[in-house]
Every structure is written in structure tokens, then in C-alpha cells.
Image 1 (tube, one colour):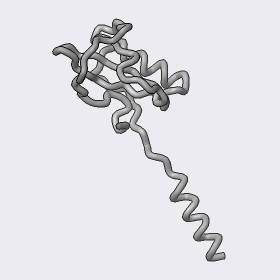
Image 2 (cartoon, helix red, strand yellow; image 1 turned 90 degrees about the vertical axis):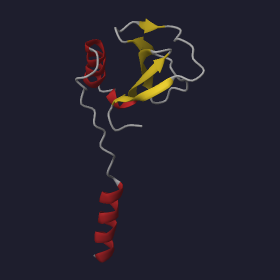
Image 3 (cartoon, helix red, strand yellow; image 1 turned 30 degrees about the horizontal axis):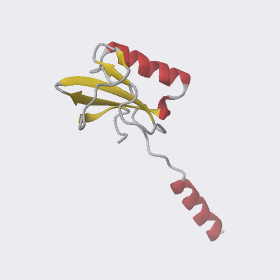
Image 4 (cartoon, helix red, strand yellow; image 1 turned 90 degrees about the horizontal axis):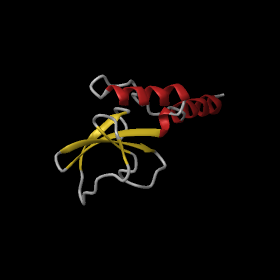
Length: 104
């Protein structure tokens, strides 16, 4: 019985996932709040990360799929215009992850 208890404890401890804070931030543009709400409603929110960059003094939002292999593939202006192709910069300034808040 001791072995069974130990196995149960190990199973419970190993099954915990990191809690991702996926509340929609209020300090981002309304179009981006809406896009995040759509991801959450569709049940695919865990597959996306929204980051903020500055290129040549202008702020952009990048929406990336967690299995995407390119940088700045789905870039938007602050007003919500999707830019294809994204503005080129050899070293865009990463301003941080906007959503989900504790994902790197």
C-alpha cells in the first residue's frame, strides 16, 4: 500500500501543467482584444502568442502560432492592418509578450 500511495503522489505531482494567464489584456487595441477572444472561443488560444515589437520607431503586434518557424510572420499595425510582408529590420526591438501574459 505504501508503494501505491507513493505512485499516486508522483502521478499527481507530474500531471500538473503550468497555468497560463490567458485573460485578455485591457491595455491593447480593441481589434486585438477581439482577435484573442475569437481564439479563446474557438478553443485554440493555447496555440497562439501575441508579441509586441518596435521597428524604426513604430510599434507592431506579431501573432504567432506556437509551432510557427518564422519571426514576424503575421504582423499588424497598432490600428489592426495586417502587413504582408512585414517591415524589414535586421534587429527588431522586442517589447515583450502581450498575451498570454506568462508565456515566454
